[in-house]
Amino acid sequence: MAQSSLTITVTKGHGTANDFVLFRDPEDAFDLSPAQYRQLADRHRGVGGDGVIRAAHTASSPEVSHLLEVEPEAQWFMDYRNADGSVSEMCGNGIRVFVDYLLAEGLVTLEPGGTLPIATRAGVVDVTKSPSGHYQADMGRWSLTGVDPIVKARGLEVPRPSLSITCPNPHVVVALASMQELEELDLSSRPTLDPEPAQGANIEFVVPADPLMTDGIGHIRMRVFERGVGETQSCGTGAIAAALATRHWAGDQAPHHWKVEVPGGVVGVRMFPTEEGEHVSLSGPAELVFTTQVTI
Image 1: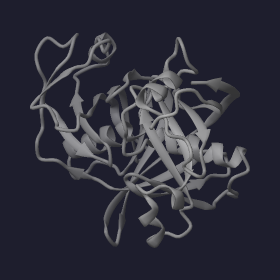
Image 2: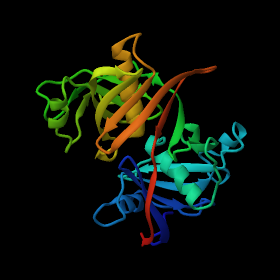
Image 3: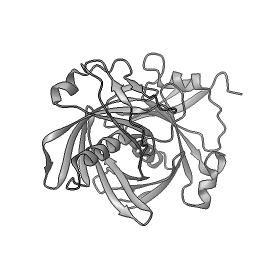
């Protein structure tokens, strides 16, 4: 049963203005309800964030404890919740902030160039720290779903086709014709998808730069409506999906390195081969803003 009242220490952090509330629960002792997660994420009555991240020991978390059989070093579980309290597989920007939080709390050590495995509902994600202080997360394999909804959104005169990608969250990517279309898009309400994915989806709208590629790196600009949240300043897995979709549309000569501009900043996406198939990584900054106590 969810606890009716609880005082916890929380930290606010963000990655390219995609912001999160983080707290420690190593022994899986807290049993927060969806309403309590919503309260933490509420920008008027709570701390405020696009999502909430609970730091738990992997061994104490029945959902992911089996991952220790594959990667014994994945001692920490990133339990990610959307702002509406719903469960999510993981978060590309959030995992960078999560690792920065673990370091700040003295829960792990990670030297520049070193890699830390993190348990998520999407499996183990390896995060590497760069000398600049940024983080790169290997998000693993991706896939096309084969079912590409037609998307209707305010500000678009006609419905648009899309490309559906799982990486590992579900995404629907729409190509727009110009920066003007992107800027005039009204994402104050959720676009409609036909058909509607069973698990919902994040919806990205993307415009390629002109030229698309500079010095071997592709450049695109993106806005996103996140599942369970609304429009956010950035979405890590959304940036990955947008880069993958643009490469797919551009053809065989498209690059495998991308810079994705979002309202909150710029993140990097890289596609690379592995023995099990192509992986994709996300790189960018992470920043912790403040720590406080809150009663929920």
